[in-house]
Length: 191
Ligand code: FES
Image 1: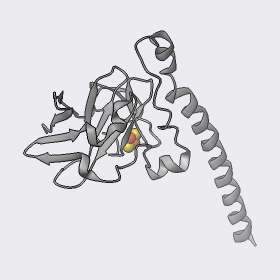
Image 2: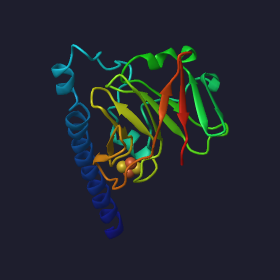
Image 3: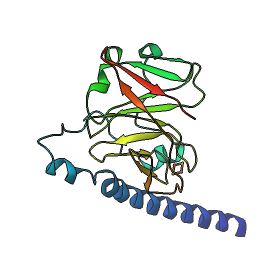
């Protein structure tokens, strides 16, 4: 009987904890992930609206599972990797033409996953796609001029890789990106 009662108490405790975490997470998602909106309003003459398709709001289960908002492309035909150069053919991945969008490059001969984003500043940026806290994937925060880890810690980094908030205490690796005349991006994988 005692054993049964203690199981019930444990389940109650677990449910209470889950509800508290869910409420905390929802509020955090709204307040943290859309702080960039002010910047959009202030500079709307120069910025497009963020990509409406990319919703970086993650619920607690997605965050526990480390599920990023940026999906892998249907095929890797839009990029290739040779030497230390990652080449993205923008003609084959036109989604990246909108500010706030991203491309995940993983597999093939790439040692580390790479996140390529079309930043809110209109430039392309590339990062080693592993949060320095627990190596989860990241997403651009539309309108936020940042990238954010999809995990519970929500580590957020600026385009230079510096930590702005969250659980990480080290910067992420940023790769140099060059936009060529033939509409290709050349990314030097330096480390
Ligand atoms: S893995 Fe990014 S905050 Fe923990």
